[in-house]
Length: 313
Image 1 (cartoon, helix red, strand yellow):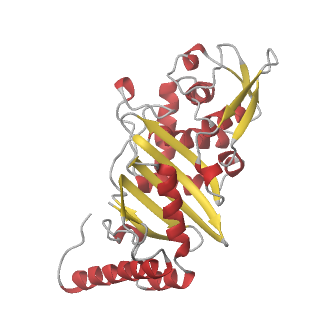
Image 2 (cartoon, helix red, strand yellow):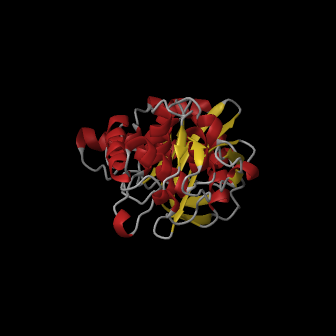
């Protein structure tokens, strides 16, 4: 996105850049030493938002279509939560057991409550759980995918297209695409639903099987929960094509921050932690001045860089 022009449009663009510069200057003054070397961090797309101030203040290529990998499962779980059937027992279909890892290891005929399949999908990113949800709720993966895309549009995800409930993006599932902006919209919607926040911050779960009495111990892939004390979820994603993806939420000193990262190269946990710390270092008064400058989230300079310890490219 580029905002060029002259006259009124040009003045508005200059105002936008001035507002971005204000935040960068504030970040420099309140962050680490200027002598610290900028460490390049490369990712295809990112967006970070202060939920309390409703301010998106750092963004890159948020409208770019990118493979979201298992971040897709957030939408799958939204549909499950909204179904009102979380207490139902789901008979695991054979089709769900044939998916690629990562999976919980359910066997055809196992009986698992829908709420536990939601937990398995969110916490350990179990693909068999996501497919079992889809088939139980809609009768087939194809019908569930249609429901996913319909719900996505209704939520406000205007550019996404989904081909499966787990986030596969190759072969018959090619074309599973979203944007950082759409995923931010989805996550803001999801955190308003019952159960979602409690599930999104779990580090491990025990899933009981109601036919044989056995259970499955599943652990999160979200290392940020253990590494960053202010992290409160939400979901990881990875495929060979999508790269390392993450939607993370952190709360500190009364602030509530949401971060979407797509195809990050490097240690995504360190990247996320440093982005959060820089975001939290920007005071509320600076954010208010930013908002008063009249810069809308969709109009910010997508190539703005974060100053201080790291440089986002």
